[in-house]
Image (cartoon, rainbow, N blue to C red; front, side):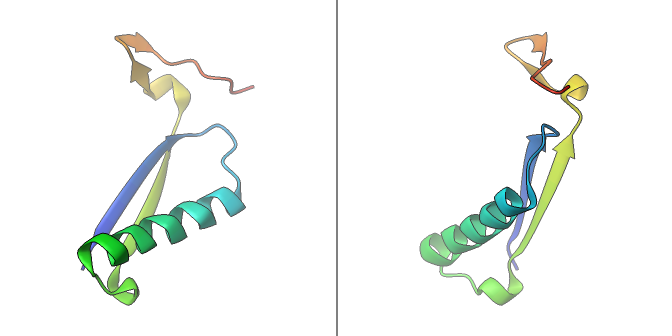
Length: 64
């Protein structure tokens, strides 16, 4: 049972984008690992930008 965890900053990811991420990630494990999509779980975590860092610095992003 594959479990895929996608983490993104909470910068207005739309429902359609989430749908595409879930479908795409599922298809990837089907294609590469030959896993059953019916048992493939995908979770998207939206992380507040103030809790994200890159290049040794707190990421401030474009959140308004």
